[in-house]
Length: 138
Ligand SMILES: [Zn+2]
Image (cartoon, rainbow, N blue to C red; front, side, top):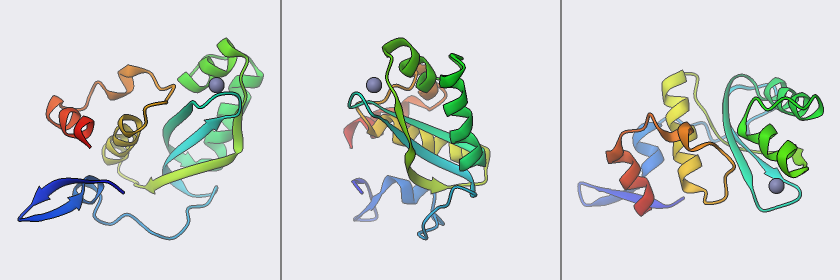
């Protein structure tokens, strides 16, 4: 985890500021309120997403969107436009947060930390420029 912000002479991870109670136990497919990442099988791209539903249900929706040629997200658009497949059986998680606003911020932080996301730029539009500049320096 990158150290991002100095606070009282101590450097602490940026995520700790927003999410002091992130659970450390492994997250499961049945869990809800997850920020997750799926890798493309055919290129270095990744998709970072968040869901209030169970992770299993959300991943299933992504998979079905690709199967049914529905460009509902940047993930399905990337898969369909490039004829690429995502690794739906290998999903990474960044954390669990039941609060929708906090979960969206956690998603944006993780989108901005990755240089190879297929996420739309609009996914990060609601984040203040102050935080945007801080994240880009990390
Ligand atoms: Zn790809």
